Length: 188
Image (cartoon, rainbow, N blue to C red; front, side, top):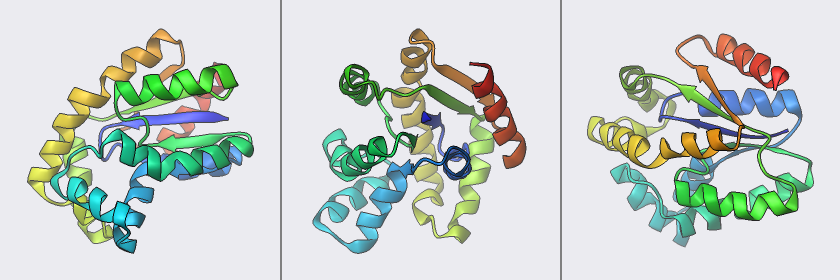
């Protein structure tokens, strides 16, 4: 299974990504986790990335690709992937599709976890206790939601045009969301 998870910050991409990766026996690749790991390691790349994360801005494409490129290549060798947090922009999606489609490794489906902004705010505000301090600042939360609507939502049309977009109401328990995803994927 090759699956991309899209959704606003706080929609549950990480939670669902882990469960789906286990279910399908493929790697879960979270661009956010990989980026934060570089920040914690204080690598040169991490210092560059950290400034963007602290402001709630999207990390530039070249830095994101530098971080996740090897993980995606390794995952493709294992027969699939669950991508969480990539692509985030139409440019990233177009570039990834142009490379993946001819190689036969394009996503089988794109799952959009739909949550209203108020629910995303509520979920993000609770992340401070989980060590996700980049999500706890209200100004950062608002900036991330604005960026999501401006940069990431256009991806929905891109994937809908390819007939691989599945929209899931993610304002439910994690188990209910997972069951809805699996049911939707089994009918495709």
